[in-house]
Image (cartoon, rainbow, N blue to C red; front, side):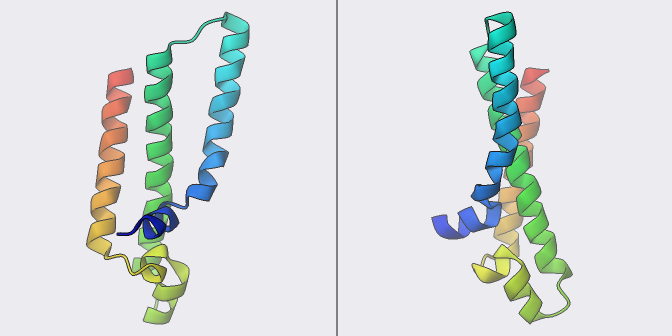
Length: 108
């Protein structure tokens, strides 16, 4: 999978919407408590992005599988547009959610 195909699959441009609330909480915590835990902050940031990437990728994966015909598969999903094999996409998705789960367990 090329970098361009991967970025289309995870829709990198939409990740800003996930990072803004995190940054707001980060700056509020820094302002109010005058301290942060940098390790936990980085772990939480990584888990947050991985969950968002998984969700977007899962949406693209389902759009591809639920399309009624091949024309819709090619137009409604990044898998069809970028010619990504569904098995490859599923492996990436399992990796994203597994890594996010491990990071979440570490944080707990």
